[in-house]
Length: 122
View 1 (cartoon, rainbow, N blue to C red):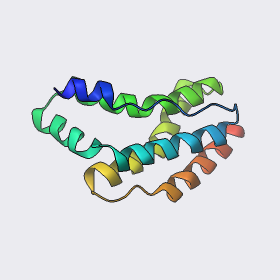
View 2 (view 1 turned 90 degrees about the vertical axis):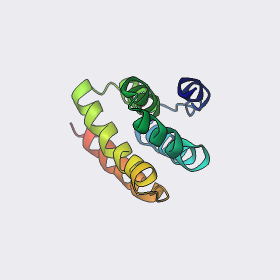
View 3 (view 1 turned 45 degrees about the horizontal axis):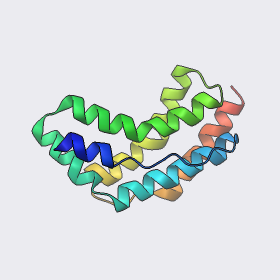
């Protein structure tokens, strides 16, 4: 049942513009909306309770994939890409899934600006 929920939960990616910061901002908005509007927290809590590590990894991987896609399209290498995705997404997941707080969209957008600026100078 949880696998079926994961299959219907994904949203399509935001339209790509080729502008790294713009595309990451769009993905932040989609993720914040997804964490707010879908039963994400309940699903992940059920996965944790069921100790379904493979399903939990698949679900979280689906949340991270659009960010990896944007950064890959921008030519960002694996190590920088992993760091950038973690910096942007981890606080949102902690807020929504562990602390039961609304996602801090404004903070995430500031992080995107910082990450995009750092990657532009790398």
